Image (tube, rainbow, N blue to C red; front, side, top):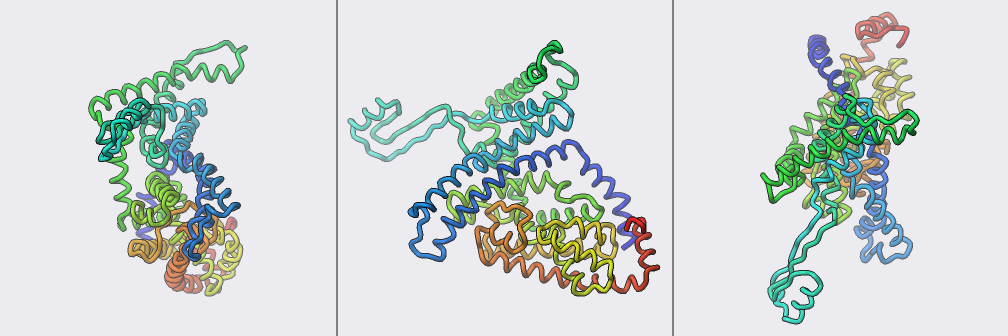
Length: 480
């Protein structure tokens, strides 16, 4: 065990530290975090509509929330909230992405967000066309339709228009395009700003105006570079926008890959490995957790809004970002609420029991820093194996229960501080089976933790051995 930990400290920890501090990945993480006010508001709206409109028909025949006056108005209001949040989640993210990139380099953040948004949205199609065939229209109807500005024959109708932005180009589908185009455009803007290729105004001009004028040249260059790219791309791939091409060739295969059992287990394992060295695993892996699994979750949320759980099962994703929270990260990363319970029941060490008592309250709301750094779990060789193993086992239970149809997939974005059981219940659109799956995962994890908790009792028969163990772990006795 000591050899393994020494190897990880020598080779893994430096890489983990560099990843955790890399400014672009930090900006990406902060960009996702920045969208939380909107995404959580939209998630609340979807969740309320699930409880008011979608869940009751499963228990009451003939229930129709849209026909009940008060309920109908609440559903409508929730729809407006969804329109301005999850329906345009990608548009919100792209601004946050540019803002945080500019902030990382110490240049005008507002202009960075604007450049990122303008560059990304400029490649979206603004026109539409469609038609209906097999109508067998009479001559009078054809003439009336043509007079209205559409194109019609006896066989059918063809309609076209311009000046609209389809929502499926602005929701979670927009994330991948935003990450690439938003990054390129913002970095061009940032580099030109840092080289001071700007318009300079006298000191007497108000700062807000000076900042806006200073960003004109860098922003113009960035937007023209992106526009030229879109133009060249349209010549090479005339039948698709860059967003459509990226979605078809990159996003969908990547999201499909994320649904594999191996990928899910690997993510869970690496989150724990980072945490063991005191590095916030979900933050380090935010590009994967948020950039891939959260995109899948937003897609599920939108599908649920449109057609309930049946549409999610038909067109959605089985494992998403919230699935980790529902079935593996109860009490925080590592499912540490189970360890707290095991310590309270089986630990004979006063220090462990004291930390466990202090950690119960935060642990109920999935805040695990007290137990992580107070016990500590970090760099504790005795707890290394269960800390890595229990989330992998829990993820496996949740994954296969979802794949085999024993529980509905996660289709709601629930705030991470929601207590276990309630979180999995709400996240799955109020599927009563989800808390049972969570309970099974917790019981199995509990069984894994017990031998290690008991073993810890034998490792500290007196204060002297306690001191030695603390020193061996690299901690200062006084600080502990």
